[in-house]
Length: 271
Image (cartoon, helix red, strand yellow):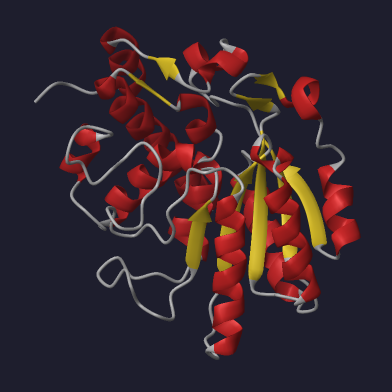
Protein backbone atom coordinates (compact mmCIF):
# COMPACT_ATOMS: atom_id res chain seq x y z
CA UNK A 1 0.00 0.00 0.00
CA UNK A 2 1.07 3.55 -0.73
CA UNK A 3 0.80 6.28 1.91
CA UNK A 4 -2.54 7.64 0.70
CA UNK A 5 -4.00 4.13 0.72
CA UNK A 6 -2.69 3.58 4.24
CA UNK A 7 -4.27 6.84 5.39
CA UNK A 8 -7.62 5.77 3.93
CA UNK A 9 -7.25 2.39 5.60
CA UNK A 10 -6.55 4.06 8.96
CA UNK A 11 -9.76 6.08 8.61
CA UNK A 12 -11.66 2.88 7.84
CA UNK A 13 -10.17 1.20 10.91
CA UNK A 14 -11.16 4.17 13.08
CA UNK A 15 -14.76 3.81 11.92
CA UNK A 16 -14.67 0.10 12.74
CA UNK A 17 -13.37 0.90 16.23
CA UNK A 18 -16.10 3.43 16.91
CA UNK A 19 -18.76 1.08 15.58
CA UNK A 20 -17.71 -1.91 17.68
CA UNK A 21 -17.50 0.18 20.85
CA UNK A 22 -20.72 1.97 19.93
CA UNK A 23 -22.59 -1.32 19.53
CA UNK A 24 -21.48 -2.24 23.03
CA UNK A 25 -22.34 1.24 24.27
CA UNK A 26 -19.16 1.98 26.19
CA UNK A 27 -15.46 1.35 25.88
CA UNK A 28 -11.90 2.60 25.68
CA UNK A 29 -12.40 4.94 22.75
CA UNK A 30 -9.67 7.52 23.25
CA UNK A 31 -6.62 5.31 23.56
CA UNK A 32 -7.77 2.98 20.81
CA UNK A 33 -8.18 5.80 18.30
CA UNK A 34 -4.82 7.36 19.12
CA UNK A 35 -3.14 4.03 18.29
CA UNK A 36 -4.82 3.37 14.93
CA UNK A 37 -2.22 4.97 12.67
CA UNK A 38 0.58 2.93 14.18
CA UNK A 39 -1.18 -0.43 13.94
CA UNK A 40 -2.21 0.41 10.38
CA UNK A 41 1.39 1.20 9.42
CA UNK A 42 2.61 -2.00 11.03
CA UNK A 43 0.06 -4.53 9.81
CA UNK A 44 -0.50 -3.20 6.30
CA UNK A 45 3.06 -2.21 5.43
CA UNK A 46 5.79 -3.18 7.85
CA UNK A 47 5.23 -6.46 9.63
CA UNK A 48 6.09 -9.93 8.39
CA UNK A 49 2.88 -11.86 9.12
CA UNK A 50 0.61 -14.56 7.73
CA UNK A 51 -3.06 -14.32 8.77
CA UNK A 52 -3.56 -17.94 7.65
CA UNK A 53 -0.78 -19.05 9.99
CA UNK A 54 -0.98 -16.77 13.05
CA UNK A 55 1.47 -18.90 15.06
CA UNK A 56 4.17 -18.89 12.36
CA UNK A 57 7.46 -18.98 14.28
CA UNK A 58 9.23 -16.51 12.03
CA UNK A 59 6.49 -13.88 12.07
CA UNK A 60 7.04 -10.43 13.52
CA UNK A 61 5.34 -9.91 16.87
CA UNK A 62 3.22 -7.01 18.11
CA UNK A 63 2.50 -6.45 21.80
CA UNK A 64 -0.26 -4.01 22.70
CA UNK A 65 1.06 -3.36 26.19
CA UNK A 66 -1.67 -0.74 26.72
CA UNK A 67 -4.15 -3.58 26.40
CA UNK A 68 -7.26 -1.43 26.74
CA UNK A 69 -6.59 -0.23 23.16
CA UNK A 70 -7.47 -3.72 21.98
CA UNK A 71 -10.32 -2.55 19.69
CA UNK A 72 -7.78 -0.86 17.40
CA UNK A 73 -5.92 -4.14 17.06
CA UNK A 74 -9.11 -6.20 16.72
CA UNK A 75 -10.32 -4.07 13.81
CA UNK A 76 -7.03 -4.54 11.98
CA UNK A 77 -6.86 -8.29 12.65
CA UNK A 78 -10.42 -8.77 11.39
CA UNK A 79 -9.74 -6.70 8.30
CA UNK A 80 -6.57 -8.73 7.62
CA UNK A 81 -8.54 -11.98 7.83
CA UNK A 82 -7.43 -13.45 11.15
CA UNK A 83 -11.11 -13.93 12.04
CA UNK A 84 -14.54 -13.06 10.65
CA UNK A 85 -15.59 -9.42 10.95
CA UNK A 86 -18.90 -10.54 12.47
CA UNK A 87 -16.98 -11.06 15.72
CA UNK A 88 -16.48 -7.29 15.97
CA UNK A 89 -20.14 -7.02 16.98
CA UNK A 90 -19.42 -9.11 20.09
CA UNK A 91 -16.78 -6.90 21.74
CA UNK A 92 -16.65 -7.65 25.47
CA UNK A 93 -19.87 -9.69 25.43
CA UNK A 94 -20.17 -13.11 27.12
CA UNK A 95 -18.24 -15.86 25.26
CA UNK A 96 -16.68 -13.35 22.86
CA UNK A 97 -13.24 -13.87 21.34
CA UNK A 98 -12.73 -10.09 21.72
CA UNK A 99 -12.45 -9.19 25.40
CA UNK A 100 -12.05 -5.61 26.63
CA UNK A 101 -8.27 -6.11 26.90
CA UNK A 102 -6.13 -8.18 24.53
CA UNK A 103 -5.98 -11.91 25.29
CA UNK A 104 -3.73 -14.22 23.24
CA UNK A 105 -5.73 -17.25 24.40
CA UNK A 106 -8.97 -15.94 22.92
CA UNK A 107 -8.15 -13.87 19.86
CA UNK A 108 -6.40 -15.22 16.74
CA UNK A 109 -3.50 -12.95 15.86
CA UNK A 110 -2.97 -11.46 19.31
CA UNK A 111 0.63 -12.18 20.31
CA UNK A 112 0.43 -11.34 24.03
CA UNK A 113 -2.21 -10.93 26.69
CA UNK A 114 -2.18 -7.46 28.23
CA UNK A 115 -4.18 -5.32 30.58
CA UNK A 116 -2.16 -5.16 33.78
CA UNK A 117 -0.33 -2.01 32.80
CA UNK A 118 3.45 -2.22 32.71
CA UNK A 119 3.67 -5.94 32.02
CA UNK A 120 3.33 -6.07 28.24
CA UNK A 121 6.70 -4.48 27.55
CA UNK A 122 8.46 -7.09 29.67
CA UNK A 123 6.84 -9.80 27.55
CA UNK A 124 7.95 -8.03 24.37
CA UNK A 125 11.51 -7.90 25.67
CA UNK A 126 11.33 -11.63 26.38
CA UNK A 127 10.13 -12.30 22.83
CA UNK A 128 12.99 -10.27 21.38
CA UNK A 129 15.51 -12.15 23.49
CA UNK A 130 13.92 -15.46 22.49
CA UNK A 131 14.44 -14.63 18.82
CA UNK A 132 18.15 -14.30 19.48
CA UNK A 133 18.35 -17.50 21.50
CA UNK A 134 16.38 -19.43 18.86
CA UNK A 135 18.32 -17.87 16.00
CA UNK A 136 15.12 -16.56 14.41
CA UNK A 137 14.92 -13.42 12.31
CA UNK A 138 11.92 -11.42 13.47
CA UNK A 139 11.15 -8.02 14.98
CA UNK A 140 9.10 -7.36 18.08
CA UNK A 141 7.05 -4.18 18.13
CA UNK A 142 5.59 -2.99 21.42
CA UNK A 143 3.17 -0.13 22.06
CA UNK A 144 3.15 1.31 25.56
CA UNK A 145 0.99 4.12 26.94
CA UNK A 146 2.17 7.34 28.48
CA UNK A 147 0.08 6.73 31.60
CA UNK A 148 1.40 3.18 31.66
CA UNK A 149 4.90 4.61 31.64
CA UNK A 150 4.44 5.73 35.23
CA UNK A 151 4.88 2.05 36.12
CA UNK A 152 8.29 0.99 37.39
CA UNK A 153 8.18 -2.25 35.43
CA UNK A 154 8.36 -0.27 32.18
CA UNK A 155 11.76 1.08 33.15
CA UNK A 156 13.05 -2.28 34.32
CA UNK A 157 12.13 -3.74 30.92
CA UNK A 158 13.70 -0.83 29.06
CA UNK A 159 16.89 -1.16 31.06
CA UNK A 160 17.19 -4.91 30.47
CA UNK A 161 16.56 -4.68 26.72
CA UNK A 162 19.19 -1.96 26.37
CA UNK A 163 21.65 -4.01 28.41
CA UNK A 164 21.12 -6.98 26.08
CA UNK A 165 21.30 -4.73 22.98
CA UNK A 166 18.09 -6.20 21.57
CA UNK A 167 18.22 -4.50 18.19
CA UNK A 168 15.15 -6.44 17.03
CA UNK A 169 12.96 -4.61 19.56
CA UNK A 170 11.14 -1.42 18.58
CA UNK A 171 9.19 0.26 21.38
CA UNK A 172 6.57 2.92 20.63
CA UNK A 173 4.93 5.15 23.22
CA UNK A 174 1.44 6.47 22.48
CA UNK A 175 2.07 9.92 23.91
CA UNK A 176 -1.47 11.32 23.90
CA UNK A 177 -0.79 13.08 27.23
CA UNK A 178 -3.93 11.79 28.93
CA UNK A 179 -4.86 8.86 31.14
CA UNK A 180 -7.93 7.62 32.94
CA UNK A 181 -7.72 10.16 35.80
CA UNK A 182 -6.64 13.24 33.86
CA UNK A 183 -3.65 14.77 32.14
CA UNK A 184 -0.43 12.78 32.46
CA UNK A 185 1.61 15.88 33.32
CA UNK A 186 -0.71 16.63 36.25
CA UNK A 187 -0.69 13.10 37.66
CA UNK A 188 2.92 11.99 37.26
CA UNK A 189 4.93 13.68 34.53
CA UNK A 190 6.99 11.36 32.32
CA UNK A 191 8.62 13.91 30.03
CA UNK A 192 11.22 14.16 28.65
CA UNK A 193 10.55 10.50 27.90
CA UNK A 194 12.70 10.53 24.76
CA UNK A 195 15.73 11.71 26.70
CA UNK A 196 15.11 9.07 29.36
CA UNK A 197 15.05 6.33 26.71
CA UNK A 198 18.19 7.78 25.16
CA UNK A 199 19.91 7.67 28.54
CA UNK A 200 19.01 3.98 28.90
CA UNK A 201 20.81 3.30 25.62
CA UNK A 202 18.09 3.37 22.96
CA UNK A 203 18.12 4.67 19.42
CA UNK A 204 15.45 7.28 20.02
CA UNK A 205 13.19 9.24 17.69
CA UNK A 206 10.12 11.45 18.07
CA UNK A 207 7.43 11.79 15.38
CA UNK A 208 3.84 12.79 14.74
CA UNK A 209 1.98 9.61 15.67
CA UNK A 210 -0.78 10.35 13.18
CA UNK A 211 1.56 10.81 10.21
CA UNK A 212 1.99 7.36 8.68
CA UNK A 213 4.88 8.49 6.51
CA UNK A 214 6.77 9.72 9.57
CA UNK A 215 6.03 6.47 11.40
CA UNK A 216 7.33 4.35 8.52
CA UNK A 217 10.41 6.54 8.10
CA UNK A 218 11.18 6.18 11.81
CA UNK A 219 10.86 2.38 11.60
CA UNK A 220 13.19 2.35 8.60
CA UNK A 221 15.80 4.33 10.53
CA UNK A 222 15.36 2.06 13.56
CA UNK A 223 16.04 -1.02 11.45
CA UNK A 224 19.00 0.58 9.68
CA UNK A 225 21.00 0.70 12.90
CA UNK A 226 21.96 -2.61 14.52
CA UNK A 227 23.56 -1.57 17.79
CA UNK A 228 20.60 -0.82 20.04
CA UNK A 229 16.90 -1.38 20.64
CA UNK A 230 14.75 1.50 19.38
CA UNK A 231 12.32 3.81 21.14
CA UNK A 232 9.92 5.94 19.12
CA UNK A 233 7.78 8.61 20.75
CA UNK A 234 4.46 9.00 18.93
CA UNK A 235 2.93 12.38 19.76
CA UNK A 236 -0.78 11.69 19.37
CA UNK A 237 -4.27 13.00 20.14
CA UNK A 238 -6.56 10.94 22.33
CA UNK A 239 -9.75 10.10 20.45
CA UNK A 240 -8.18 11.24 17.18
CA UNK A 241 -10.63 12.18 14.38
CA UNK A 242 -13.73 11.32 16.42
CA UNK A 243 -14.82 14.82 17.45
CA UNK A 244 -17.10 13.63 20.23
CA UNK A 245 -14.15 11.89 21.90
CA UNK A 246 -11.57 14.59 21.25
CA UNK A 247 -13.79 17.21 22.88
CA UNK A 248 -14.11 15.13 26.06
CA UNK A 249 -10.39 15.24 26.78
CA UNK A 250 -9.33 12.70 29.44
CA UNK A 251 -12.97 11.62 29.84
CA UNK A 252 -12.76 9.84 26.47
CA UNK A 253 -10.47 7.21 28.02
CA UNK A 254 -13.52 5.06 28.69
CA UNK A 255 -16.73 6.64 27.47
CA UNK A 256 -20.28 5.91 26.40
CA UNK A 257 -21.34 6.26 22.78
CA UNK A 258 -25.00 6.30 21.80
CA UNK A 259 -26.27 4.72 18.61
CA UNK A 260 -26.88 8.00 16.81
CA UNK A 261 -23.30 9.15 17.36
CA UNK A 262 -21.56 5.96 16.30
CA UNK A 263 -23.76 5.52 13.25
CA UNK A 264 -23.18 9.10 12.17
CA UNK A 265 -19.41 8.62 12.44
CA UNK A 266 -19.14 5.09 11.06
CA UNK A 267 -21.66 5.72 8.24
CA UNK A 268 -23.01 2.17 8.54
CA UNK A 269 -26.45 0.73 8.03
CA UNK A 270 -28.07 -1.96 10.09
CA UNK A 271 -28.27 -5.30 8.31
